[in-house]
Length: 162
Image 1 (cartoon, helix red, strand yellow):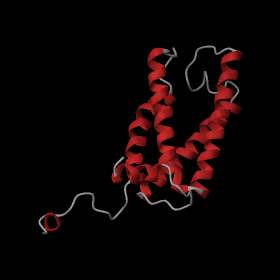
Image 2 (image 1 turned 180 degrees about the horizontal axis):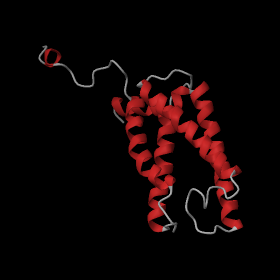
Image 3 (image 1 turned 90 degrees about the horizontal axis):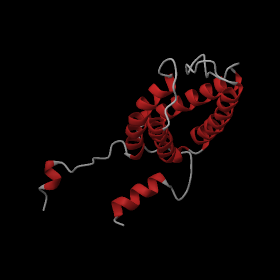
């Protein structure tokens, strides 16, 4: 493994976890926004009478089992949301790693949806969100790994120096 690969891995999996975020601030701000949306969405799935299955996702006449599954899914989302909160408030050096998890989860949802589609009366907001969040998380991952103020490519003066 070369030095650049090692540095990148150390940024994703820091040897010492702390509250210093070294990437671009926009990546930290978007992570906070994803955190808030995750917690809000999870509460809807847990506390809405139909778990959002019919009223939001558009499942026609959702059964008690479907509503229960939505509530269980909401609990999983809430737990992830709490982890996001802890990372944001205490362990910001893990935000790049969290973007990898977000990217994996939402990409996985998209792929699973292709093979096991959910038939609804309309396109659920979560399905639209998957198509937005995958590229957004990829961009934010790159920005969380980059260091503001560091030049990626040498300038012409630096490359012509002896």
